[in-house]
Image (cartoon, rainbow, N blue to C red):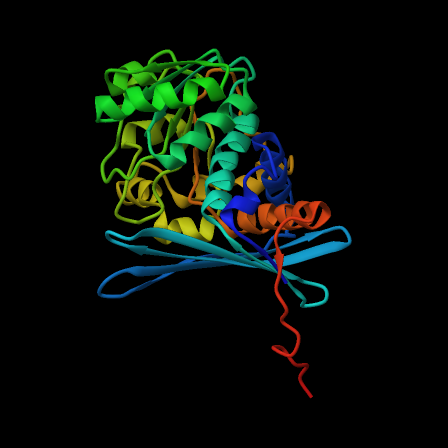
Length: 329
């Protein structure tokens, strides 16, 4: 088994390459070749265990994977990912997955922008300045040739620090926005990566033709997008990465359905768009919406690609596991 730590994973892959892996997994999802088990949580007095799993069948190759992580107040979040060969049941890799998760989460938003945003999109608004917001920005800039990105968070100092840290990493001009409206107005893409429990902008401020990518909420109690945004997107396209999981962990969708703003039947699974079975956008002026919860098939797709690259380059540590697993008799 190949063990990969965070340092091993750094430098193995670029964001455009991560996006290709995630794009492929959604194409497979649309074709019924990517079974996904939504996230499940176990709550303990001092912290929470989160686990999700999925599989991919891609030509002659097939993989299974499990992503697990803990969230303990004061101790942060710690991720691991385990990869199997789905043809031979061989345990291929065990990897630390903080960077892996950051990459695939950003890439999913980039892939959504690739299929759902206007091709001439040149300006974006980004809500959030945390660790995950970094790859959201990078992926959006890979998906469209953005000239300007307006960055907003409630903390002005964090906005300024984010702009200064990320400006050398993207070609788009980064601007610290002074208000949610400033970040939204004039943007063809609006992306949210926050831990907000209430909507972070007013849907009335969205220009016609805007694609909204909500990537921060994967809990039923959290919400980044208001009812007005859903009303406007209901006339266009609303998509999510996994319908089953969204019914109990997408706070945005749950609230919009509960308020009778939309119905579940109006929500498409993104794999149908990526695989060409459904358009991501029907007109230039429609407002559309992608809700990203983060799904295990993204981890399997990226984990398999990282494993292949690490193996080819001699990166990582081989761990002996012979004798640990025995064939059933």
